[in-house]
Image (cartoon, rainbow, N blue to C red; front, side, top):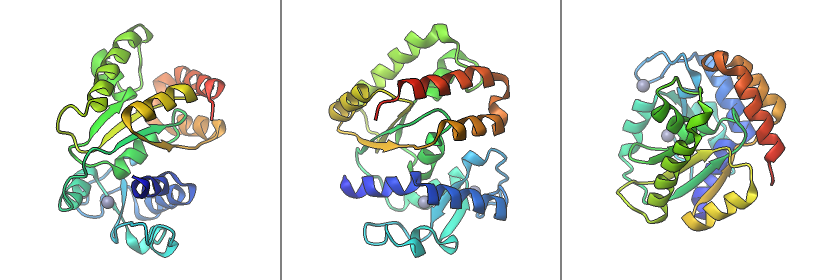
Length: 226
Ligand SMILES: [Zn+2]
Ligand SMILES: [Zn+2]
């Protein structure tokens, strides 16, 4: 578990995230394997050709070396990693303010067959609305579905490989409870309020819902406890 936690932390670190953005600008927003154009750059995964391990984790010549990084789409990344086989039943609690890069992080590390409990995706699934439009009157039902999936994770029900719980989770008591109940590893996506607002204004998918999301960002920072 400690090894995994250390490796996950690389993918939320500022230097790695900045390098990923730089490479996308330099190389273009497409998969270097199959050539697919990826207009939504959050879909682009920066894959390490030499796999990150505990022994090379602190070696920037491996972790932050552009020559060791290939920009790929989700399909190509799944194909690449399937040969390593499944990783059994690690649980990650991925939290942080809205637009801090939680989904981008999960795309970096998750594999096909992992269980995703992503609040934005749950909202979309049961509202029938475009992603990021969250009709507030459905919140009880969204939370009920989330509760069921959390229960699946807690009881290790089903045949998933790893599980990811993705959401804001600003309150430390709630996080502590989940971490204990689920035996989860915390992964904090760090970003300032200004960074989140700036990303909101650059996000083509959230143009219609900007005001709503400014409110979500504000309320996350109001509630956040370390
Ligand atoms: Zn591809
Ligand atoms: Zn990879």
